[in-house]
Image (cartoon, rainbow, N blue to C red):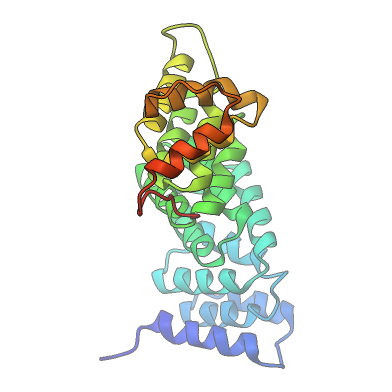
Length: 270
């Protein structure tokens, strides 16, 4: 069975990155312009030796390259490139104009491997704003796969996004089901609006979720110690436990949890 062309070049990329010698940068750029896909892939493999310079020409190619194997080779080189530079250069191209579905899908493959927090922030923003279902699905999958960085990316967008986006963020936080996502839901649950409007519905939805999640109780108890979340955490605790301890009786709430805690009740870190 023949080895796929892109896999051969991926191995070449790895070997080039480890090699001491490297071709002149301008010479490599000429390869990237070649009509021959094999020569373009050779150039992409060689440019991996320039991790800070590589993102710009590789991302430019990712915008328009039609050869599937060349695109896979570009992803391989971008994974080895300077992660912060890749995110910065990608953001600049996204701001300039819609780069298209293929660009986002390959870019998210890069971020999936680098786990770069700025890259996950781009994925979060894209998830909230894209009208392309395939891109939205890929971003959603990426955010759930890297929960800590994904949560940070979504949290960073919460205040700047419209209410529809805030509902989407809340939904992903529920899917994550980690300690930090529950803490975030406790925080956003404190947003109050007029009765029966959409903001209040978001608040009530958070409350319903948290009071139904037994494992959220220690984090609601934690919320009693903060001015912003004290009253709301107390209300959730009363609903969740049926107890009427005062918000200042933290030791009693902790004892209740100790008495009613079971193996398997703990939330994952990520």
